[in-house]
Amino acid sequence: MAWKWASASVIGTSHIATADRLQDAYSVSQIGDDGLLAIVSDGAGSAEFGAYGAWLVCRFLKVKFRGHLQGQLELPSEDQILDWVDELRDQIAAIAISRESTSRQFAATLAAVLITPNEELTLHIGDSAIVGRRRAEWDVLCWPENGEYASTTYFVTDDPEPRLTIRRQPREHDAFAVFSDGIGDLALSHADEIAHVGFFKPMMRPVDAASEEGRLIDLSTKLAGYLAGPSVCERTDDDKTLLLISGV
Image 1 (cartoon, rainbow, N blue to C red):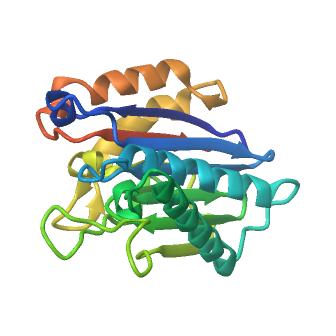
Image 2: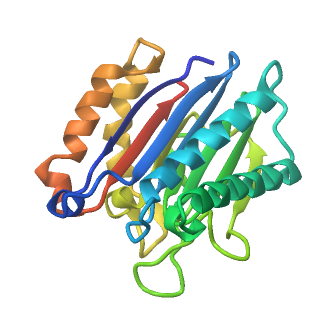
């Protein structure tokens, strides 16, 4: 399986206006010859170390999955994943104590997909999303979840435990998109809870057509320019992260 992807993460205009930093983080990595892991995390804007929390989420889970899958493609069990998330939360708590802070100040969401030749595994906490392409249609694999109040969501650091959804299913999709909530209004129909085929079809076409493998540098640069451009920023002032992954 020859994986290729375009990826970009750009700061929102609201954060530029307040001289803040990009709160999103992501990771895409091939695992063995046939597997791929993609992770997006969005640090809470109200959290002092939200950007650091998002980076920790991506780095920690990347290391855990790569270590588990070294030399094999058998997916980790749900219990193993829950243990990893607990370990991640403990690590964040220890870092928070060292900074005389609290875990809440490192709050970050999670959207991750692990793809092997035979299976798909998704992990989800919060308002990011994952979609997959199956026979030219785009299925929502992880729908954004909002919290009890407007403009709130769920985080890895929530007490007493995070609202984690783990789904494991046979491999059905040949392309995937993982994105933070800044892309949601562009990519999803919230009224019908479906993906906008008109958004993903043209965005994925050049990724499918690329002859290279791995991260597509030129397309990633163009994707970043598009996400930072006026046509997108007029619709959302939030940070925007989008991973477009093709196995075609």
